[in-house]
Length: 383
Figure 1 (tube, rainbow, N blue to C red):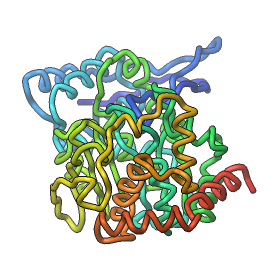
Figure 2 (cartoon, rainbow, N blue to C red):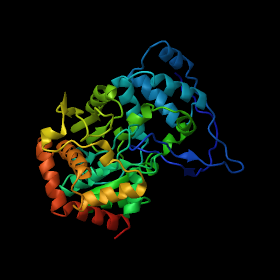
Figure 3 (cartoon, one colour):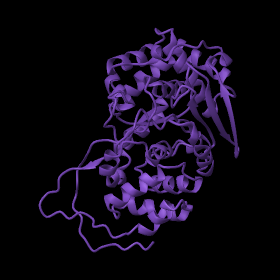
Figure 4 (cartoon, rainbow, N blue to C red):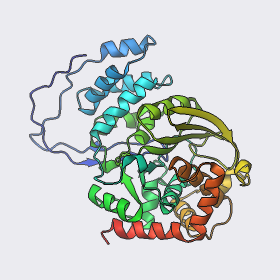
């Protein structure tokens, strides 16, 4: 594939809409209308050979996937071929090479958070979305992990459900428009920040029309959680389908994760469930171990999923707040405890899920988790 750059002048564009990392199928920033005299990039790359290869059952090596995604992220591929590429890739599980090649390009194009905290100490709890929605469990788990001393850069965005991490944190009082510099200050002063994806992934605007037109998850659902703007190398990553567990784990290993847990519950959630067993893939020291856990195995009770499902944004906000301030003692608390335990395990704070549950209980009941949220709210506004 030969990349040819056309001789064009490109004007400035504003961007709207959003990319959601976790909490549902997600969108990227979309270009608003052109002003007079602006010229958009012309497609100068033909992916026909790549598409024919994929249509015939072939796969792409890491170098070829890097070339293809670099072309897409540079606005050099037309929408029809982007749609064909994403659709062909969605008919099967991506290879590790394909996932890693695409993720490396996404990472190169991300707007970074300029923090002095080493990435090998940093945790993210973003999942893929695309699964049934409960409430903002990974967001609450991230705050608890941060209160336990794990630097946590929570990557996320708005959701089609209207109950994504961005909507909930906004309602709780966090400044979603904080600059990367303010986010860095949040990380260093409070132990956590919210990485609002629309501020960090400008290059994904070129695939917006296609992503919005497709009615199924694509490889981009897997890529969002792999492109943390603070460079986090510790991860709790829920996935919408267990079929992706092994390749995502291999991808995390290839992308130099220090420790990660990939999760899919037997009742279909992209998080650890208290309504059914959960399959986990533990990535650590170059090894990948797969196993199942149940709520009872870590001292929690099984509960019906309806008891941890928010129906409105107000419900979701109330559930997150009541879990963090300790007033909630029922299934929503147990759901967050289980996921916070996994986050603390991936973050290196504990050595097992059972120990993590005990540590999460202590963070909530001591008041430290709610204090962390309140501190984050203040610093995100410049206090």
